[in-house]
Amino acid sequence: MIDKIKALLQEVENIKAANAEELEALRIKYLSKKGEISALMNDFRNVAADQKREVGQFLNQLKETTQNKINELKESFDNVQTGNDDIDLTRTAYPVELGTRHLLSIVKKEICDIFGRLGFSIAEGPEIEDDWHVFSSLNFAEDHPARDMQDTFFIQHNPDVLLRTHTSSVQTRVMENQQPPIRIICPGRVYRNEAISYRAHCFFHQVEALYVDKNVSFADLKQVLLFFAKEMFGPDTKIRLRPSYFPFTEPSAEMDISCNLCSGKGCAFCKHTGWVEILGCGMVDPNVLESCGIDSKVYTGYALGMGIERITNLKYQVKDLRMFSENDVRFLKQFESAN
Ligand code: DAH
Image (cartoon, rainbow, N blue to C red; front, top):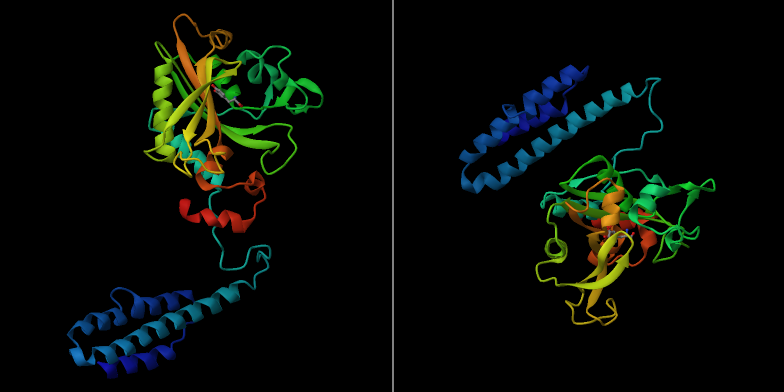
């Protein structure tokens, strides 16, 4: 068998191909499943045990040499082709590195998947909005501070064209166009006029959830919140609700989860309280239902909203928000395996 391999090795070293078809024929002859090398590989089974080592080495050498030779010939054809006038000089050099999904996209998908399992479907809306969808329909009083120039980016000094400051605007858009039952989740980018620092940015991302139907209660909301917290942060996660205020929900609450770094024992991250805040929520204010054309005597609903950066920070301990938009490959690459 060794002689046969050596003969083939010599043969392979001298192969020539005039064009790509001939080269392909050679590849089939030697390297395909029914090719000569595969046949030898099959025969290898019958080689006496004391010769296996030596024969194996020759066989591997033959395979490698053939593969290299064929690659070499292939490259020489490719090079001839690149002599064409229409060669693309702007193309990146080989090897082309594949990108990875952005960490925020990974977390966004995780959130949407959890709510997807509960029957929520995704709804999206525009980032350039008007006052009605971002504020007025959501029960913000005329003089509510969130409308202030300090927070909101208005476009060309027109107070009716602005960049949405929260994804709650998508609630209005859906409710205006659809009667209950409504069960949606709205992921998206939002903008606020904040000085950029490690803990604030002029844009960030939110996910909003809305459920409107007959007999929706605060107990339903709490159940969904608990399910979400456990799915996102692990089965031992606890939640607590603190009363709060949002113009568009009544009653309103903020939800904390038991700190996932110290399991609620208290650490620097949770400021030794054992709890970290993750989202706002509440029962949709009847005024909001009515302004969107939904009969608040028949229907009730709950809503909740969270920042994707905040959830990501808790889950992956990214302390500096700016990392998300700097596109530093060394940062982005770290989350390849989370894809
Ligand atoms: N829109 C709120 C914000 O940007 C978040 C929020 C709080 C959304 C409570 C809700 C909610 O749907 O019920 O801070």
